[in-house]
Length: 130
Image (tube, rainbow, N blue to C red; front, side, top):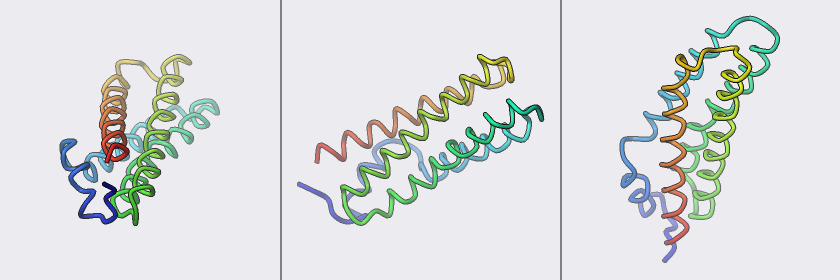
């Protein structure tokens, strides 16, 4: 059975834990704070801007998914959130590996990234199976 309205799809979202609108917004704010704390070197700013773009778009795409007009659109928007989270993880790892930011400063944000990846993966799988 395909769910074609927002109300019919909300069970998929609600089943996956706390309000993702709030959680993804908080995540974006953490990304913004990290970006502003990065050194002003060229390398840090280039990587930081990429991080800023991908990390803040997770919540925007989730909000679009939540208001999707069809299940296919919902799945596609959740897929974009997954891609952006994976990209954000990459930029965070690069900041650590390039020794631009200490891993101790980013471990909590990496953990949240991985948790959100798991949540969005679950949402996508459940929506696809319906």
